Length: 278
Image (cartoon, rainbow, N blue to C red; front, side, top):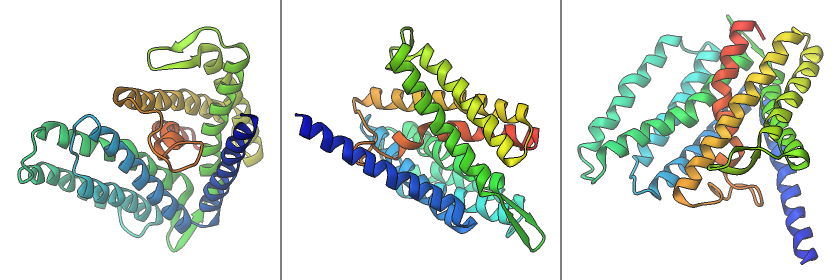
């Protein structure tokens, strides 16, 4: 038994190290590596979301949904790089309404659910990832200013909150946060994760030369929104009776299991950074 547990821990540790290395490398290397990373993450999360919906009998438009999601990520990148103007984002509106027309020819028993899940998947997975590009990329004419550390810090804050909440909850957790959806989460762990994320954000602000108060606020926003994202994905999985959304990482689950908090935290964090000039 102990040998099996040690082997499982070794697999989890190894896959975790590889995961962190790929994420950090993809973010730090160049804007184009960030694009590739977001395309892969977006495609993986969207596939798993549609898969979970399929277990409820919903037949989303898989191919077109993936196309729409990847197009949203690609357009977000192109706008941030200054290759095209923001007006091109309006192309996503008629493209989204194609889903309604396509459903006419599918002859499925749940057309309303199929359309809703197809569009919801794009909004839930691809849109937040597309929002990350203007946070790290700024086009000044022919000059492209790339700030990968801001994106990396946002991702790190999500993980910091997750780890902090787990450690504090394991040590002193007594009062259940949302027992119906996630029995192991506690209010103590939630509070601990928020405080630790704010502390780490403060250090990040000092490192990057930003306002300490603004960075502390960012830590709180990311922590609270990240927990909501975690709970939302737990709700999805519980509704279909599965433990993991996929098998992307041995011992860690799927894409949604790894990025559920980031997907919900990203829109709030990006808006906060724009308002407070981070």
